[in-house]
Length: 163
Image 1 (tube, rainbow, N blue to C red):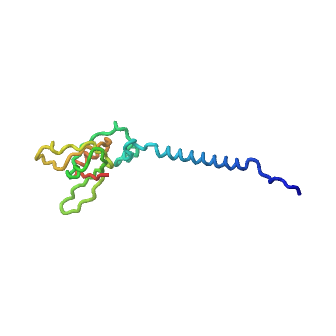
Image 2 (image 1 turned 90 degrees about the vertical axis):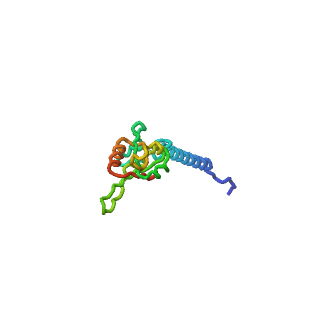
């Protein structure tokens, strides 16, 4: 039998390179989609906590337009806790109702979740001997949450938990 060169299919080497190139493109496209999904802002762009809804509000409450927010002044029973807060902090506001004498106090209820601290007024401006106790705190909340805060402040002592 005469000697001849081995038979090689045409384009075999190029076919493998083309397949690898296609896979790289698919991988690059998938990574681009994932990167775009990660970069899409949820809520306010510079405040990721803002996307969390407030207590007893719909899921869109945290993403509400800042124009739909109101400033609600609340008196917190523990003045030392208020001194730890700064504007921009997020807090939960808890209402603890006093138990009748001889009975155990019930659990505190959450009145506002992740409310943004707008201002911590200076305590030196308070009238001495006015009997109010505690410290004033101004929160940026939805109008519905502001109404709940006002109602709770009339019947219970308020406390804060910082996030």
